[in-house]
Length: 312
Image (tube, rainbow, N blue to C red; front, side):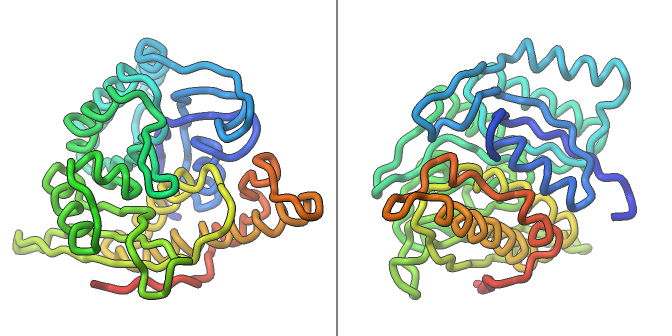
């Protein structure tokens, strides 16, 4: 990458493992980006373990950190990336910072992973306080350029359930109308023609032509499920999508193929290592299933495309 491209990443931090900022920083650095990381929470480990300890930051603490950057005139960014947040006031402060950064750099791109909840066994549940949803819906999404919700989060943001690909495309159009030009539903339980062992990823990107008209590119990817619970994959996905949309700005198909293939390679390596470490006959535990990020450096830098996208 010829020019220095700087990212302000505001998301969770864990001492052990790869979620939030730890899942985003290394892959983006490998791909040539400069990362300034601010923690929304700092925990000993992710919450998939039996125990965790740590702190949730509030808006005053975020404001103080940002003021320090501003006083030194080092608050100049090309991208903002946000993920898991637990505090409503903190999320509101994120919006204020994004708006200020966009005022000083009109080409800044805000990539938002609206982490709120997920579906388990067909039932959706939130794992952040309910009062974050209206902030995402009314303040965050309107200033975002790229959003990466899962199906449940896309339903929460749009207020519409998704039962088919057509309904998913309609929801993505609703999300476009709220602000973002790029919407990727990172996982869904929609039926795949390849069978129940597959997850569906859907992407939609609005582009503006030189004559002022707009076009929309839509893609779909069918991804084979892995029989394990990984934590941090959404954070890795959002970081990779930031990188590959930067390198392929008007080619959503290529950006998503490289993003999904990189995540696939990391998960495959993680599963191999975890299975080798697990006691015979037992499923790998959360510590064994921590993402093998460093070991996957070459796959992150130059992912072999093993999952193709279909243009809809």
